[in-house]
Length: 250
Ligand SMILES: N[C@@H](CCC(=O)N[C@@H](CS)C(=O)NCC(=O)O)C(=O)O
Image (cartoon, rainbow, N blue to C red; front, side):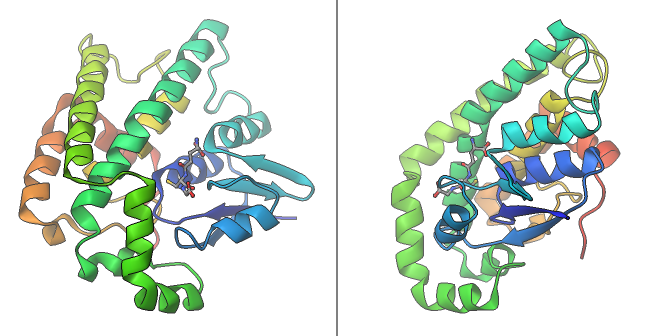
């Protein structure tokens, strides 16, 4: 039976899981939902509250980190380094990035993009039609819930901007010795995690679902995005996407 990945399609933690499944050659089908509308399907599938969650027969794997471990077990060594010390280092980086970078890029991108109703089409793509229609009607309420739930306001966005700068600086320092990957000389979970969690502020073309083109970003956000894209860490993430991720379907 084909595994099922329950997602919020544009979510970068879902992208992290999706990329891992594809890298490990796992066949799966994606079931996308809008934020808030995801709660019931995730519970019914046996998960907690967040996506992604993977369902493979009776096996339920919640959270992108165990999903990567599950995918790697099917093709060992694809993402989790075989060398024990490298593996520990890569998993530690994954954990740090999950806790620091992921929430910061999400908050910054939401703050700048949510007010622009014309960008809703990217949020509402690949979800059931009824959710799309309900979102149209309930937009102010849904956005209010997202904003309150994730503390999305100007001060939060500015804190997140600083956090992203700090993480990019740290990653830039790691890369300063000329290494091509973060750990162990080859592509691993650490690289995949950095690139996918940085994606909401870099807009790589190969992201697993279509993101807004940069030409449609509000000017003040675009400036910052271009700065991040041009930084050592940003250019690294874009290279990982170009070389290690299949192009997004139309
Ligand atoms: N540690 C989790 C984080 C996942 C996460 O934060 N997912 C968000 C989407 S980006 C979510 O489901 N938010 C909905 C909610 O919290 O209700 C993972 O790596 O899977």
